[in-house]
Length: 376
Ligand code: CUA
Image (spheres, protein in one colour):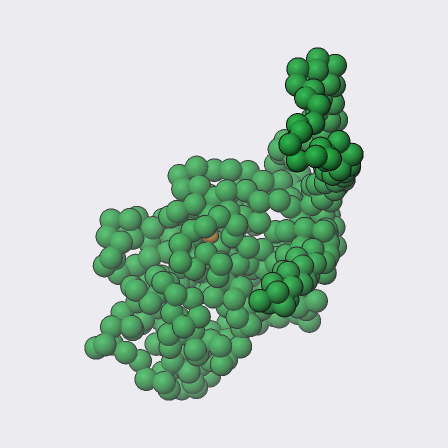
């Protein structure tokens, strides 16, 4: 029994140590932006004060317990209740500590809560859905899902909302979290220092697949970011008539395109997609059990995505086929499984048809695709 307890403690400590490693994908210690840095420093400042307080108080308790314990069992130690000097001392010391912690805390709140000027910033609208993230770039007129592209060293204002339940937007290495609330907009100021790939995670329990609601953040150099914007406005390569990809396109248009937009590279597509998403949401709200259309990730240039199912699986042919065959296997409770007609017995697709759709989706890449690597 003892060895089980000892092994459990060692295991728990190991997990704890691993979670704290700055290299862990969601560690708040490996910061890559000024806001995360500010928040980390504030945490460490408070943490070390707490450590000192802990050592003094616990050390005092242990020392005094041994020094003044009664040597005989029948005798009470000397009672010091009502010592005015002591009472005043241990009221004033914590008050001073609270003030010392409050000063940098208030400064940090001020620095992170006051939004930079919108004209000089990149504005992004992020919407939480069960269980994926929608990202809109209103000025650039671009819409995408689950993979957020940012330029380095740029002030970014993320306008945050939800279209169903409470979610929370969090990129641990870049900035602290903020709730995504239906019918309400919160604003989060973020900034990334270094190009690279970062992990995002929903941080508010939002239903059965809450833990499966992730996203990726791809931070580019300014040039690469401009390339990405251009690519998002470029149509994909033309498909060869009669090819698997082309057959997949027909199946996709017939079965999936009511909820998933795949052509937001077109001029004017942005406004259309915003309207469509709004209508999908309204339809779903009216009849949550049976609505034929529901909000779903925009799949424009899906072939360029690193992940699928909101950051859960690597985006490749095998995973995509598995995902289309049975989304519940990867993420239980998806609306796709509940609402799409292809999961009703009479409309089921054959394995060949599912593979054709997967090939089509993976072919969705801009025809001018540059050599930009998003997977650094
Ligand atoms: Cu969305 Cu948790």
